[in-house]
Amino acid sequence: MHMESHAVRRFEQGIVLDVIADDLPVRVYIAICPPDPEAVAAFVPPEQFDHGASLHVAAVGTPGEAAQTVEDILFNMDPHDAAAFLCADRECWLATAESFGYVSDASPLK
Image 1 (cartoon, rainbow, N blue to C red):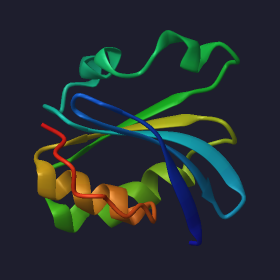
Image 2 (cartoon, helix red, strand yellow):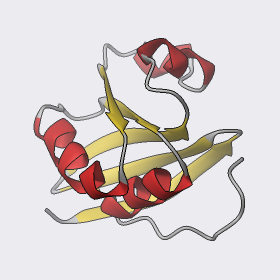
Image 3 (cartoon, one colour):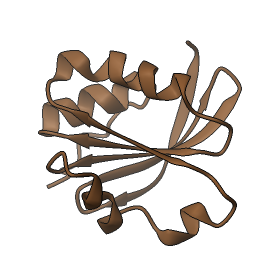
Image 4 (cartoon, rainbow, N blue to C red):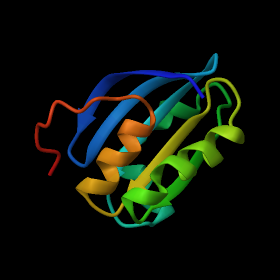
């Protein structure tokens, strides 16, 4: 799957990316936080849902599962949906971001 991404903003626990995945435009939130779906309220703004978009949430527990998790989530997304990836640690965060074609500038996230 071809992906292009660019950083929209950083937040305390992570980053927001706008991604084009094989012509599918989506917003992606990648955070270092516990795998609690309610944690997304801390970094996904309410206006994300103003136009009826869905939010897909997934946990990434090891760097090795990041690429498959990203692929699984993208398979179920519609244009302009959003996805939140709750990563166990910095290594998981980096593997998830790289799965979207993002190259980190190595500045600290936590």
